[in-house]
Length: 427
Image: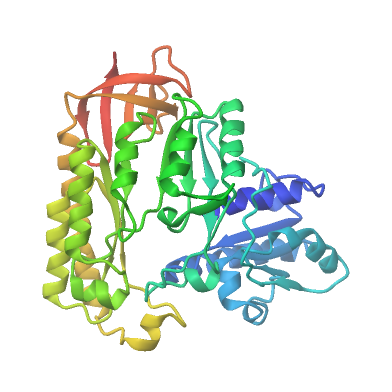
């Protein structure tokens, strides 16, 4: 979501006579787009600000701004804590950037952290400045109303609201026309997408099917799904359309019902496994990835082992794994004690990471001998003689270059693997 927001901000600024700088040191305006989900993310922002302060000493007219979730969470407090910051702007106020920058030119600091119940930036065509020219993101909704007890997103991104379905389809068509071969539909919880048009309501399943029908050569992905909402209808639609990628990111967070209840995740271990069973039944080759939090408030060794067991049962291809980081003003901070020691959190996280590396390797070993259609994203990082791309399951595949180029679809037979990469030859 932050990457998508950065492209929206770039578009707004370019429309107001700004240009993207090649290097930090060349810039007159530096904006740090921030995340507040974990404490480490905010610490990285603070460290980056220290680097920028030295630039500002050499170039006093440089404007430094904090935008996004951290700006929304800390608000004007950032001005007190970070003296070099001139601008603070929340995720729903990006249209106000030109006016705020004019204010700064007159010698004042400027801020807008007002959340909106309507803003989706649907009419802004993002500048794809960081894209590989093959894959692009389309934000289909903003905000969240799930209120997981550990999460700041409902407070930093506000009320859940969906984009006009026509604007999403038009943006997808425009990307295809511009040469993009793959799009990812983005939302805090894409399953919650709803749009009323001509007296009827469209849900996420109908949206993704409409996007897939634009062109069979346009690959479609989506993230993120909430387990409580993922429907048989959506899984059936993925199975029905070849160009809807067989890849689902389904954050489990914990395998323990008691922990899930404290997290306010609104599903049980049994419900989650039922959804996994349905996915494997209808799309047997579907790639499955997840998010896992280690050491949430009150987590016992038994509850931790339930997470280990659900990982083994599902057999994830990949996971984003973190130790619990208490966030200010969340329900967890108010209701529960962060009582799992740092040492235990680290040890449990290490066990989770080691298991996932094993599961990822086993998953990739099962793909040896199979043939996948791979969308070429560019040259491999390790060798200019190889190309790199992803299959429908969102696994990285590396294979000899030959005469293929970025954006091509190539059938690749897998002959070897690591825990992170499939290695193959083109057919």
